[in-house]
Image (cartoon, rainbow, N blue to C red; front, side, top):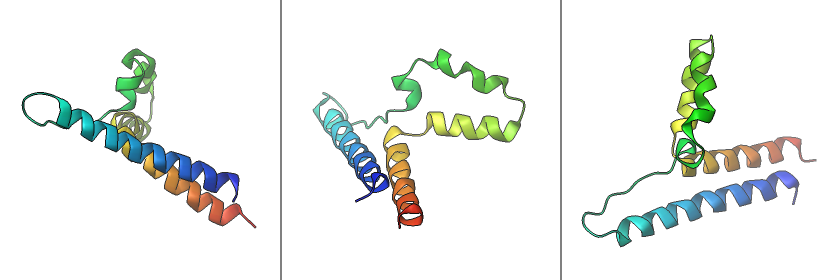
Length: 92
């Protein structure tokens, strides 16, 4: 197993565990079952991403905002899949 495959496994398992714990948290809260998704902005303070508004390219700004505000479990699983693909391409 290469480093890419190990990183892919860790990222995918992390994303799936995050989904599991978020689902348990939604079930355990009293009242309505409301699922909330964790984003990078929720983990790290939003002031650290103020540089995104200062970028001059509109497409780069939209892409960065999309990545920062997408659910964290999707980001982890996508990075894991990309790591598996990189492992298949670069592994001999």
